[in-house]
Image 1 (tube, rainbow, N blue to C red):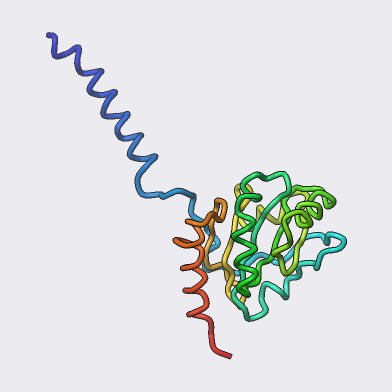
Image 2 (image 1 turned 90 degrees about the horizontal axis):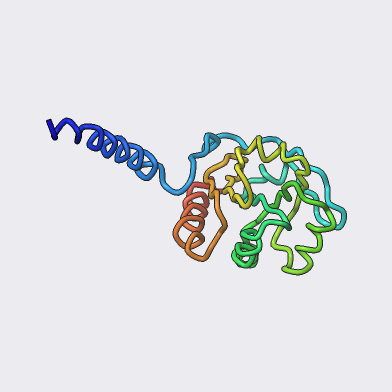
Length: 180
């Protein structure tokens, strides 16, 4: 009869184990993007005075590039900023989409930390980010020369993330780029 008292404990332990396995196995650190291999959404952002405006043609200019969603109020965006500056200094085009922010704050952020972006657009309501499947900032995408989304990084571009994930994705994208 005492073994019958153990049945609820065993069932609870088994169920807890299944839930834990479901949370920690197979998915990695971030949710997958349904847009990988799909064309980037048509640019629908506002201009920010004093910054080069982001246009749709820029995303489909034949060159591999990075599109980074960021905000001045985003602490992880500040952390990743030096790595974006390094990529821009190496010649990688980096385009920025300022997410749910005020233009003066965005400009002040870039004046303080320097501007790595070739062009910037403002997504004041966050609707353009929804088109990209952005969950929150920062998020960074590698986009092929034809405007196809090739890679998504849904966390800050840290030194480790740059080395282990973003640079390999850029190298793969550049290697598969058609020759001119």
